Image 1: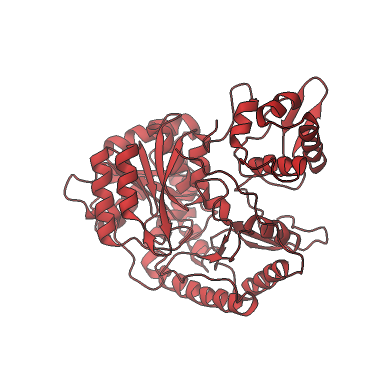
Image 2 (image 1 turned 60 degrees about the vertical axis):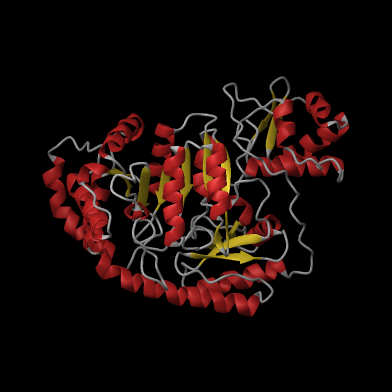
Length: 495
């Protein structure tokens, strides 16, 4: 599929016209075969062309892009040498990843095998999540252990989630100002599964959806893999452009809109109440399902934690709002517990979809989640204080090592959205990897290919000494005397 969607056809083949439509308009204006190879490599790394897909024959692609066959042959040769395609006589040329490279979104973890041949495990400045809070996980496991045998006598299938956990999540929504019953809660294996279930139920291939731009990279991946047409609402350091948002909703009438109004990922912006009301009203008028991602809503560092967006609607005025969240950011990403809050009817329908994929969630994880959720108000202040210290440490390191970069301090969330001053994010990410630092390049967060190349997202979730070491290495990569190559300009795909 073109128009920004992942190409993954039934016979695992991409046609020459499809591939040509994904390529930058000026790809052949620069040194021919190298520019073509780089453009195809970028499409593979971005997930725009799926893995193990057969590319067009050299002659067919040459005709489609208006190039010589020698240019395409040279590009394919370069891709083979670098490990991004493989070819066998009689079976064509197929996309793959080189040894040691993970797909987009599959971050290497610190200590999980390293980034460099010298054994340095590296520093991960791409994952915006902390380790588990001190003692809390141990205490929760101790609480859950004697209660597990009582549940072990049952078959263990709880497709809606453990009743006690559903009740606890519902009660917390109610305390935050959004009256909720347990039957309005579905417990999932994290917020990403929650979002994937919602998309699977509500959208079909080719449907229009709207997201913020930039937005959470893994949510974009889910939309692309579902082959949806994605429109966007701009989010800048000044916040949301609500005039454009209302116009986009009115003109495209999307099936679904996905937003992160609370300490937006990656910008850290907080949507004002007046804009929340306008968004509620606009999506209700267009009949658009509004999916609100509250994964980071509790990470309020300089302001009070916001009330759920759906709580601002008049009675009966938020039935089109679906709220998702998890314990990944407040507690630990390794504890795969998330949830969906919606109407009871919607929860029943989502559960039917869920059963077809994984039947039920982990009973042990949900048992452990109960005391963690119950003690959130007690443990969260220390967590936030730690994040404030780390945020300040990151700012000091950036000021010391990269004074030419700029950013806006967010009132909450887990990361800074840093402006490099030039469109070299992807080149810097590759060079930084050789220095043992993994970063989230700006293009991963853009709806349109090639956007935000002047940005990187840097979480402040590591200890101060690791942050300073990471920024020092990143600065060395940026200032090593060899100019970084700006990213190839790619067309903006319009839904």
